[in-house]
Image (tube, rainbow, N blue to C red; front, side, top):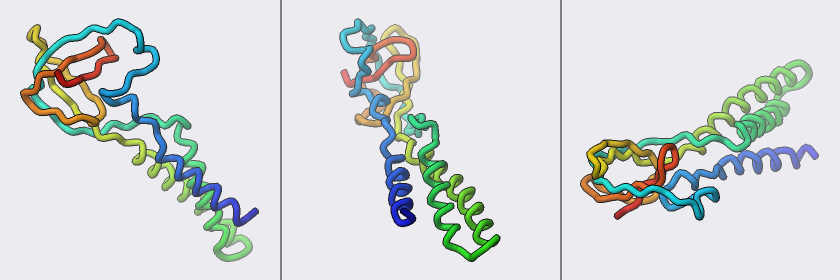
Length: 155
């Protein structure tokens, strides 16, 4: 069982990289958008800036923190004996939890475009979406949707 725990913990940490960031792109529609009428506006990209979007963890950060704590505890438990081993195990749990949390957080970041678009009606808007397409300043685009649910697509 002792040999199986590190393998399970490493497997859990590996899953941290499986964050679902696909809905942030311009080529993906959510199921509630399918078949729904959406507004289309046209505009021209005025400015582009590459940014990072921190995706929410579906597990609420527990996979990275918990997996890191398990691995850290297992590694700390290999050190010393008696009360020294207990201290090393506790330090390993804390250090592993912090490291696992940071790893999960960084793996849930997505490169995105912050696009300032001058709509044809004269209004400037900013839309941020996953950088899954190449855009250029001066490019004509379609803004599909409304409110908090807008994607930008080439025209």
